[in-house]
Length: 219
Image 1 (cartoon, rainbow, N blue to C red):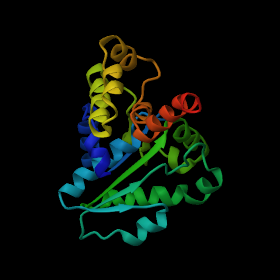
Image 2: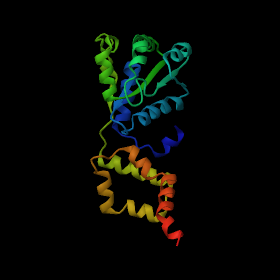
Image 3: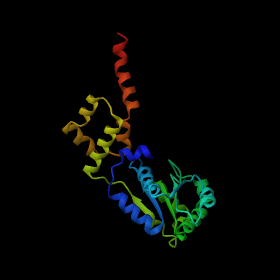
Image 4: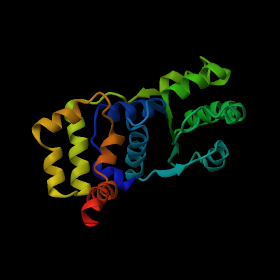
C-alpha cells in the first residue's frame, strides 16, 4: 500500500469515493480489469489509516464479524469479494445473506467503514443470481462506483509517477516521454494503470533487454 502511494495520481474518483463512504459507511468499487479499483480502495483505506483508524483486511465475512468493535474506529477492506476472474457461485450461495448482514452491521456503527472491490460484470451477475444483493432495501447500487474514466492529465501523471519511482534507464525514459510516443500512450484506447505499471517494471525491462541482447552475446 505504501508503494502504491508513491505512484498514485489522485483524481476526482478519490474525493467522490470518500464522500460516498462517509455518507453510507460502505462502498463497492467496481469497473473493468486494470482500471485501478484495488489501488483506489487501498488509497481510501490509507487515508483512514493516516487518521489512526485500524485497518482490517478480510478474506471472509466471518473475519469481519469477529473483528468489528463499535468503540474502535475501523476500516474493513475486502478485495475481489465475489471472485477474482469469474463469479464464485458456490461461495455466493453461502455468503450473500451474510454480506447483506455485515453491510447493515457496518452501517449501524458510527466507527466502521467497509470498502469492497469487484469487477463490474461479476457484480452484475451476482445481483441477477442473489435476491439479497438485488434487494432494493439494501440499496446496493448506492455504493457502486465505476473508476474507468481518466483525463489525459491524470493518465500522463500516472506514467510520470511510475517512471520516477521505477527509475528505468534514461534512454528508456526518453523514448517513453517523446512527445509523439507519449500522446500515443495516454490516448490509446486500451490504456489502463495496470499496463503502465507493467511497462515501467524494472524486472520486466531487464528481462526484455536480456532477451534482446542474448543473440549478440552468443556471437
